[in-house]
Image (cartoon, rainbow, N blue to C red; front, side):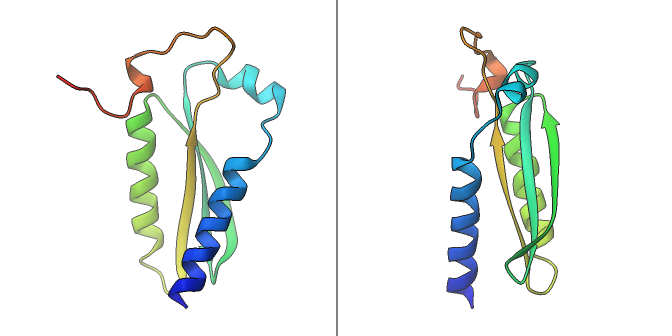
Length: 103
């Protein structure tokens, strides 16, 4: 059962990561927000998909981790997400585009 769950989450993550991004989304997403697409799963089948926006990459990953932990609390439930930021050509990266800040 656990192996099937791991394989299912891996496949879901790969499919999500390899999906084609619509050009109109790229134009809208170049506003500086990180986008989290999170999918709740029950018995390895998607039950709900929601999209959230965050100011920085670390906020996005922290929220995704928290959602995954919350989703695991239910019986036969889990969750998977994908954080991404669509950059426009020539868009400058900022301090919010790194996961951790080194001193």
